[in-house]
Length: 121
Image (cartoon, rainbow, N blue to C red):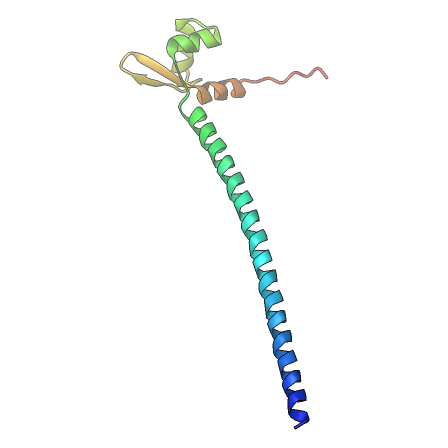
């Protein structure tokens, strides 16, 4: 009879220890999940910000057009010079009827292709 309560106590102590161990493990899992969730939210927010910036940049860069008069003003050239550059295929353009348009990116490409770096140090 003396042995039964002792075995019972040992068994109960083991059950309690297992319970606390499992509780601690679950608590650690909850903490880890909380940290993971917080980091995920931070990353998701940052990615959303970056996507918005990229989308805005793409929209700004994708359809910047100048008509022929804006192009001539920007480049400081005459109607004839603009025509000569188009004929010589120095600058890309679109023509709809008698109206001529230039993409800003194509104008930048024209300038980049004809860029001469200074040799002065």
